[in-house]
Image (cartoon, rainbow, N blue to C red):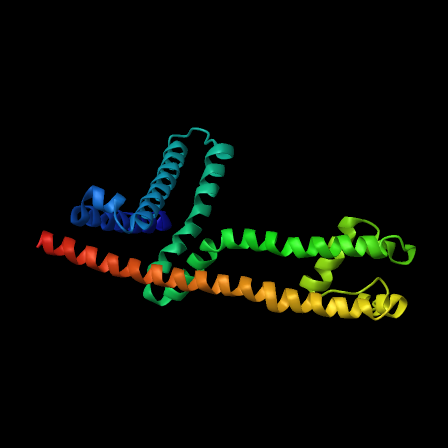
Amino acid sequence: VGWQVLHTVFASIYLAEIIRNVRIMGCRGYLCGVSKYWHLYDVSMLAVSAVELFIVLASTLTAQNGAEPQSSSMFGALRVIRLARVARLLRVLRLAVFSELLMMINGAIGSIRTLVWSQFLLAIPLFGFAIILREVLGEYSDHAEMFGSLWLCFFTCFRCLVAGDCAMKDGRPTILAISAEYGWGYSVGYYFAVVFMTFGLFNVITSIFVDNILAAAKFNESRLKRDRLSNQKMFAEKA
């Protein structure tokens, strides 16, 4: 009972904070303003608390009346709703000390499209290398486990040029075994492929990701400035 009273007190404080913000900003400014997503998040968390309190109160009244409580459905829903309490931790992201973390999250979200296109950009040269290796080494039975098909060649190229795991079953480096058996030209080709992938594509992709992080930082800073200016304007109008 004590925990439920404490929960009710905190939910009431939460509700009072929302009512105060609505009185200052107005319903339109609160739900459609600069921080509308945080405000909608606050309202959703308050709704979760209200539903939880309602379920606990209903189960308590049912038990006091001597009726059989619907434990399988009611308490199952209560457990699911209590899991939503974890989402309340997101409120700490609004503090100034977590501004860098919020900047990285915004940069990661904004880089999803870049990440998808970077996969496509990496797949093009890997597929070209795979076609060459399939035509040159695919007919040799000694390396059929790595070059027996086009997709095996593609995966081998990915391991050697991207993942850095270029080893055969017995632990020998793949490029050394192929060069020792078929000539040093494969080592030269591997060298140029590594240089192209590392200093060409990887650096370009990394620079684009860094640019997205910087853009997210500027956006977050401008958003905070708009929030402060908007709050000052609203407080001035109310005063």
